[in-house]
Length: 399
Image 1 (cartoon, one colour):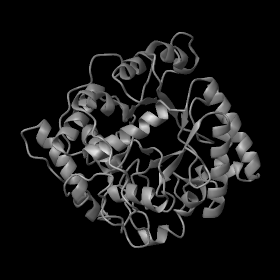
Image 2: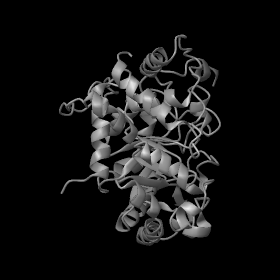
Image 3: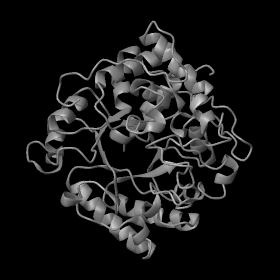
Image 4: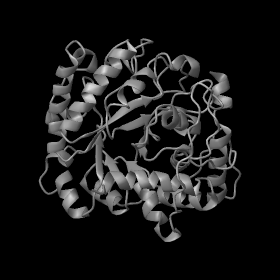
C-alpha cells in the first residue's frame, strides 16, 4: 500500500488541485497531501493534463472504448455560474436551520446523515415539508436506506431486512419490500435513496457483507434491479453503489485507500450487476466509490476523482444519468489526501455531477472554490455545463 500513499494523485486530479490551490493560496500545492486551509464554518446554523472535459477523457482500454463525444453545450454565463455551482453540491444537513441555510445558498440537494436531528423527519413546521414550503424551489433530499444495518432512522422510517436476507426470497418480493421502503421515505419528503448496493460479497469485507444481495454477480444485478423498481414505484430515485465495485477491494475506504482487482477482471465480475441494471432501469443515479482500480487511467487515483472511472460508466455502460460521489469528507481514502474544497473540485472536474459530503464545511467557501475552478480551467466549462444540465433535468423536468 506504500505506493498508493506516495503516488495517490493522478495527473488529471493533481492539475485540478494545483489550479485550485493556486487560485486560493500563494503557497504551492503539496501533491502528496494537498490540503489547504479553509476558513472555519460560518457561524450560521450548523454549518492533466489540461483540465478534462466530458468530451476529452483519454481512451480507455480497448475492452471499453470511448464513445463519440456529446454535442457541445453552451458555456454557462459568468453571472449564472454561482447558482450552477451550488446546484452540483449535496452537503449533509443536521437540522432544520442547517438545511435551510444550505438550501438558501442554492445547493441542489441535502443529505440526511445518521446523526441528524430526527425532527427533520417528524417535527411539523421544522421538517422536510416545511423546508420545501420555505425554500420555494425543487431540491432533492437523500438518505442511506438499504435495509439491515444501513437504514437511517429506522425508529421513524421502519425496520427492513438486509439485502442478503431479502435475497432469500424472490426478486418480486424484494421489489415489494423496496416499494414499502420507498413509500415511507416519500411520506417524509425524501426523494433519493442511496441504494441498492451492487457490490458483490466477494472478499469477506465487513463493509460489504450482508449489504450485498449475493456473491453471484448475476443475482446481485437481478435483485438490485428489483429493489430499484420498487423504489421507483414509490416515487423515489434509486442510486446504485459503489461503482465500479467495492466487494472485492482490499479494504474499507472509510479507513484507508482500498484497491480492487485489475480493471480487466472487473468486467467478468464486479461490473456485471451494472450491465444488468442500467439498461432496464430508467433514470437511476450511480454513486462512484473511492476504490483505486489498477489499469483504470493511471491506476492510482480513487475512482471518485478519476476521469477514467466516469468515462467507463458513460461509455461502457452508456449511462446518461447523474453520477454522485461517495462521501468526500468522511472517508479517509479521500480525507487523508484532500481538503474538502480540493476533493469537491477534483470530483467535479473528473466527471461527477453531484458532490456529496457529510461533515460541517462552509458551504459558501465550497461554492466559491467551484466557481474559481471553472474560471481558471480546473473544471472545464463543458464539463461544468453538462453536470448542471443533468441536475436541471432532474430538478426541473420538462414535459
